[in-house]
Image 1 (cartoon, helix red, strand yellow):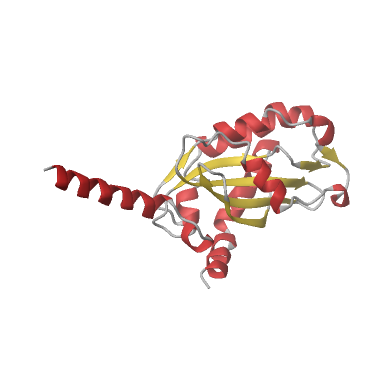
Image 2: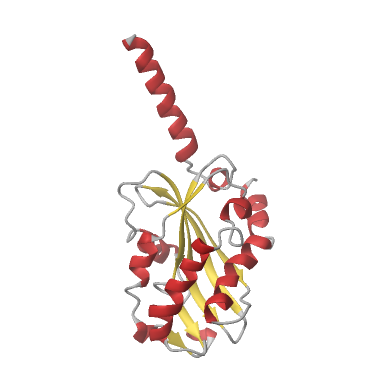
Length: 208
């Protein structure tokens, strides 16, 4: 009986390892790897001519954007967009870092004033997340800029392993805003990415 129990324990461990310990870009993009969806990280974002104040963005619109993703999962469908069997949302980490945005450094007037985020920057940002008690793969969109002049958001679509926070895949992507009101306008960037060819292009790129 004890031998059978040990065998079952090993099988269970192997199953967890297979489904949650993806280590390559191709693996994290596959259907059978479940993910934890972390939302939008605005902690190092720059806003270009947004038509509102940095204070309003930090305290009102940024929390509202992430909340909208949770309120309307059928529109902002990560499962369908990434063809995932299971997606578990947990925005607690990005809500925490977004609450600490330095509004004095948020607003710029031109795209040239935006310093592109590096791989090192992204790795350091993910290290700030509370993931020590989590397993598997996390997905976060790290926002680099919101540019109302160019009608474009620049983001880093980032998959990372948990609990170590190791970056598995991080790709710069672009989303198109749209809609009425500041919240809906910038939330639409996720909708445009999920409905466009971004994920399909990534899968084609990393399946080689």
